[in-house]
Amino acid sequence: MRTQTTTLTKKKALFEYLIRLADDRLILGHRLSEWCGHGPILEEDIALANIALDYIGHAASLYEYAVEIENKNRHRDDLVYFRNDVEYRNLKLVELPKGDFGFTIARQFLFSAFSFFLYGKLADVGDEQFSGMAKKHLKEVKYHLRHAREWVFRLGDGTEESHQRIQNAFNEIWTYTDEFFYTDEVDDLLQDEGLAVHKKGFKNDWKQLVTGVLEQATLNVPDFDQFMASGGRKGFHTEQLGHLLAEMQHLRRSYPNARWE
Image (cartoon, rainbow, N blue to C red; front, side, top):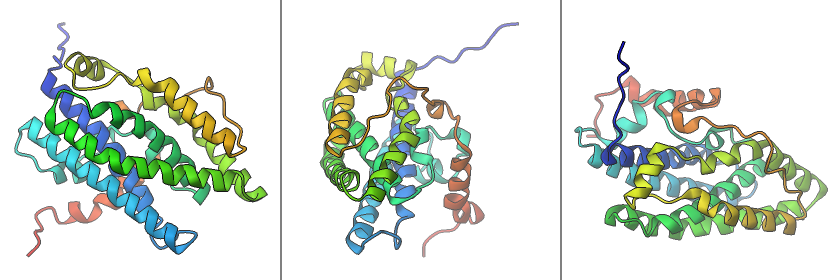
């Protein structure tokens, strides 16, 4: 019996890479949007809603370019509303429930720190449209990182309760952080083509940034060598993603042919 193999082309690899980036930002944007009207203070309610809009805007641009690369007459909304959970390629970290404010800030800081280094490198890839998006989005990523870092300081070096809550959050989600640096044949092919970056090349920079901030916030840095969860890039997710997509996709799937008049 002959086993059929799929040849990965540059076009397919770039489409997959864009989808991964877009899925991360769409799902995390959705999670942040759940804070709208529930923030601890009015200014933070607005700040989280604006960051959520940033992420959804970033995702929209990435999906738009992905369908252009794919060239199968699909719209970006098709990728958002008509894929099932196993077809999504986001990190497991971003799909976890929003939890309390400490959990949200811990996740925001870790993801923003990773995005800061990633987008800084993607700004130099050999694709004008892709690098242009990275440069534009990086400006907002810098704000996201600064915002989350300041809250880590406030909560970590704040009251006994705020300190314990954000410490618990970092301890809980640490097992998902190594997936940031997952690579496979998609990354390898695009790196050879100058269209992606070697993520493990800035892993130590990310560790140093995270460690420095946590220590300044009087927080303990969890063990980097503990068990690390993975699988999101291959469509293996927590049950939480299915619930999130059911809520996000319900209206669009109920009226698939609806149009704004």
